[in-house]
Amino acid sequence: MRAITFSAYGGPEVLQLSDVPAPEPGPGQVRLAVRAAGVNPIDWKIRNGAMQQNFQVPLPHIPGLEVAGVVDAVGEGVDFAVGDEVFGWSETGAYAEYALAKTIAPKPASLSWADAAALPVAGETALRVLGLLGVREGETLLLHGASGTVGRFAAQVAVAQGVTVIGTGGSRSLDDLKSLGVVPVLYGDGWVERVREVTSGPVDAVFDAAGHGVLPGSVELRGTKDRIVTIADAAAFELGIPFSSGGEQTREVLTGIAGWVTDRGVGIAQGRSYPLAEAAAAQVESEGGHPGGKLTIAVS
Image (cartoon, rainbow, N blue to C red; front, side):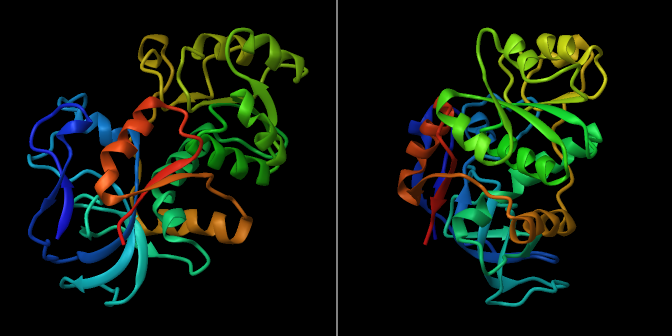
């Protein structure tokens, strides 16, 4: 099969389109004929060696966590069948024509392959942090990075739950945030004062999906360090604020994510879709920041 691999840590130039053996499913695994793969910052952080202390991978390595495709072969003890359309997390790398997976769920027929591949990381992260914050109907949530893939998913879920969401974003995203029912606030210098202008008192919770040093100002607006969670700012450890990473990768989580999309209209803003041979360009755009939507790789 064709797959994107790298045999040494480095820049995007280490990514190569290679011919490698197709993997064979073991107990509990399925093999997918990959249709689309999600591109995430962790992909290029692993590639450039930034994750070596926390996330060791054998080399050569095939990148990619998020996958959507058609079941092509099944291992022992699997309750999926050849031909099933599914999405979830890949165990052998999603930037490939075939991938092995255990944690998958049926792909709703209404979802495109790119949409399905875009859901696992953003959906799980958004729902996990909202759960940690315990946001409830009638409360106000300050959401940094509301226009990003995780933030946008979280914003829509919170709004649907009756939460007032104040979302920070760039100038190009403010109209989109407003259309989602979010109170949009421009990020950058002066953002604390701009948040104060649109709220009458302390915010009830803060979800930092952006980083960029917003935690001290968030504590100021919250009035306390409780009910603040970041997924993006390592300064949290010094400030005594929870940093949430990882999460629960289960079929139930994936089914719940899909339900928010199909039953409640939560949407993913799609960015560019790259062919498999241009995976390096996809990672370059991701690493540059502000891609304007979820980046995916169309495999077939």
